[in-house]
Length: 193
Image (cartoon, rainbow, N blue to C red):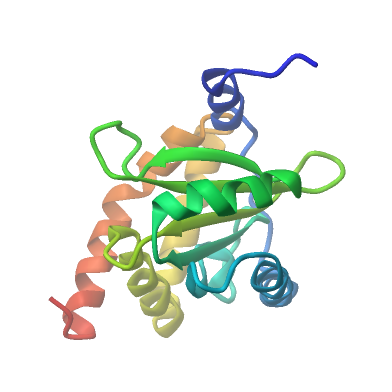
């Protein structure tokens, strides 16, 4: 069996096509199903909480049909030793991924779940309680509370998806300024420092 190197796997993953689809009410249910599966499969002493985030958690906006799940783990070291083999045996792709797409930023455990046609269905992000990724919940909550901001985000994503159809890094980088601005608004609105 010819195993691909990490570099080959990353190169393929970042070039996969970006497809946005209209909001689907079933995304909430798909999150709940996956959450239940993970809670049944993974050791409870490592998992602290599981949150639905990303665009599929924001009602009414187009998104990649991939359920993003943010999981708080008590230890990334234990995650690598115990959880990674469990999820790899279930067919998930695993990456030790930098938060800011550069090797100088903190890393975390990231998994891709695919359907039987090879299409991504879920992204699982496992981080510790002090990770900066938790700020993404502020972004989610603010866009849920302010649908006009959510629509602005949707418009940006639709434009970026056209311009970066097979460049996931470019697509993500194109959202950075908007996301940062919304997170700052959310910090002020929710009175979080």
